[in-house]
Length: 153
Image (cartoon, rainbow, N blue to C red; front, side, top):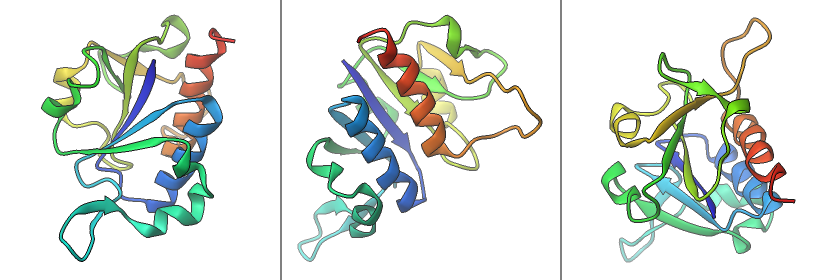
């Protein structure tokens, strides 16, 4: 089973779009790590920020949303943690078979934390063909999930 984790993602619109993408590709669990998409209700319980619903468009009903605080907690969901990140130790997305893993996407500006990189079995990078060196996180999730699920159909 493929799961997606978002670490300290600040854009609520991106999180909503990623929930839709997860639903589209059949991902059943989205793990919101750190401050990603969190707010508190009137009883001080952690809940998903309501602004996410504007871009999730109902897909939040298809995907189980889990809140965790640290990379240590991520190991409960899979021992096969794969960070999606531009890094000196990264391998090309085209060369890897993604199964039974948690795919971790880091903060839009800073990327995946060192804690996530240390916990990852592999670091995977989307090959850049043009000049700009980064993608919107929602776009990156779509590309990686297409690759991860294309061998399943």
